[in-house]
Every structure is written in structure tokens, then in C-alpha cells.
Length: 120
Image (cartoon, rainbow, N blue to C red; front, side, top):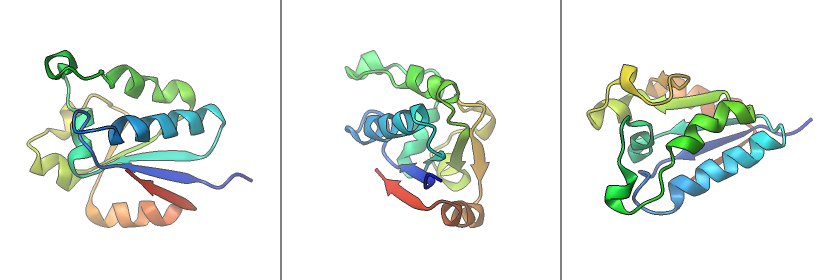
């Protein structure tokens, strides 16, 4: 049986390659039926903000890739409630409705469920 993998994405979509790299790992894992989850933590929750204008920042838009996650079999999507709140985002207004917003103690339990964890 394949080992499960949790990718923790901590970078905003416009702050460097980390957000895209995390998404690429998750999409590749999903394409190979790897048991995989994605947790948006810290500034990574900005990837879930609705109505982003990547062109204004001369960046590539990640929203299409995020929307493709379920098509690749990636259904374990999570966001940190504290990170969402601290950055002025609304849990109900996130671009990925599938993402479960978790409290800090739930995140600890989530990480323990996975065999391997990658943080970007």
C-alpha cells in the first residue's frame, strides 16, 4: 500500500515558487492515486482568497490548478482556521468550498494521520 502524504502550503501565491511547487506535488500525487492531502497554513491561505488578480502582480494564476484538484482525486483539502482569521479572510468565502477549515488541535491530529509530510 502506498504511503500517505500531506503537503503543507505556507506561502502566498505571489511570494515565490513555494505555492506552485506544493500544488504541483499534490497534482502529481493525485494523478498516481497516492493518498494525499493539502493543508493551507499561514500565508498559504491567501491561495484560497476569491477574486485574485494575478496579472496585476505579473504572476501566473493558480486558481485553475486549485479547481482541478478534485479531478485529480485530491479531496483531502484543509485550511487553518487561525490563519484564515488572522489574514482577514472569511471561512465561507474561500475559493475552494471543499476545503475543511480546521482548528489548531485538529491540525495536529491531521498531521498525525499521514505517513509523510512536506512543508513548502
